[in-house]
Image 1: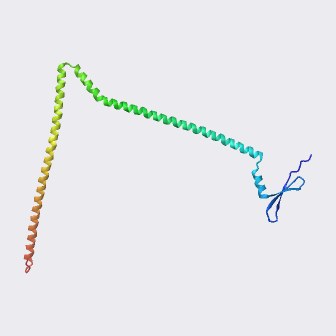
Image 2: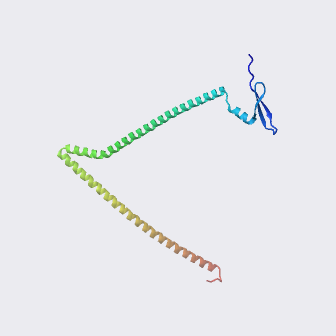
Image 3: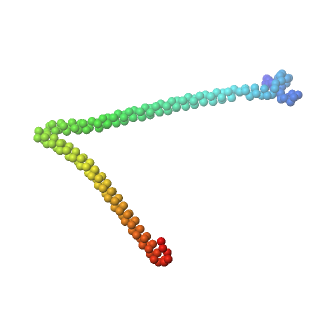
Length: 202
């Protein structure tokens, strides 16, 4: 059995020059006249079955890729959160350790004094008296040294001011002597010039 002929379309021109489509049936008879622009646009909008399947597969692949990227991003966010949490915990531990060290340092002098007192109490009475005397002597020595240091500083300052004053006086006297010598020399030069050049008088 012979296959049926499909309906065809032929192009024509209107009296004004517009391109047209003449829709024909299997026998070649004209069924409809369409504008080429509109019919061609409708043809472009229609898609074949194979093209639609390809597009669907592409959209599915894109959707899968999006899901994978979302999963990867979620994993990265979780890993970052874990790192931040570990850093915060480490900082907290470091802060606690630092506070403990500072507390121990503050307590150390008091503990040392308490240990010394306990050790002194355990000594015999004569040794305790000797330690007390030694502590008094050390305190007296420290105060005496402080006083001497302050006195020495004051004396040094006084000596420096005296030296400065004497130096200023010496410099002033030397400057006066130099001025006098210069004046005498200038007078001697003037007299010598007057004796060499006769007829000129002051």
